[in-house]
Length: 367
Picture 1 (cartoon, rainbow, N blue to C red):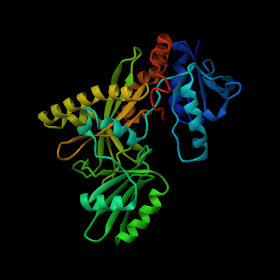
Picture 2: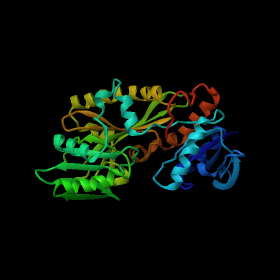
Picture 3: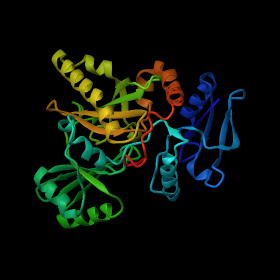
Picture 4: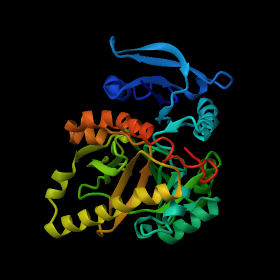
């Protein structure tokens, strides 16, 4: 049987999703393992992790060779364990005897730098690395409203909305499903806060886009793309994410809600519905191929699309390790398809051998 490994930073991460995959493994001719990168012995190339017992439907502590097929579901934080795992995963991705379902995408700035020179450039909000507080102040003076987001952020963590009033400055963020708002009375106070923020991590600056609905709730379209068992890109589904009134995030982790794309689009005027549909089709047809041409092979993509009040359409984020909550809540009949997909694509990769792999030295590897 084919050894199929699911790799996470925490052994309990995404427990229900990984259990569902493991329950289907035997029917696909696979044995399922889960492990964390730091448990690999670099001398023996064995790893201490868990093996799924298909009879008892349970995980058993086990030591085993590094699986030939790996599904990377590692989400890195700023903690020491994450920092320990990152170089180990980079090393695994260089090995010719191991095939990853997908090799990940670089940070948001690298993504922007690649896509801005493609046919999708018009759909990208202008994105700049924050170099110092003066740069932020100059942009704020010019644009009046801006967004700051971490260069490696996920799930909406660490995103800030900044607005310049006549004399004061308004800063807003969301933490643990709460909107946190603060007024700085002058530039000096704002600079002090900004300095403490940007010295801890790298941030990007983007213009603020009016991406809220009539109830002043931020919303976007989350679309899941995956490769089929034949290795062809296809759309699994899409849904609408809606955030808190007056908030800046539509992410479910920030307390957002979902509704089906079909229900939402049915309320649009026919011409607008057709226009949005055609634009999305164009973006989704081009995006995966452009990314794989620039980086290493991928398996799945979560694409977040924003629609501004003026009708403009924006690619807000592209995630190579997307969640499935939006689809499972709006299209629960997709559950088995979603759980089988990694296994079927892994089987496809074993059949085509190394044809899809690209040399580590050919492209920049990232997470």
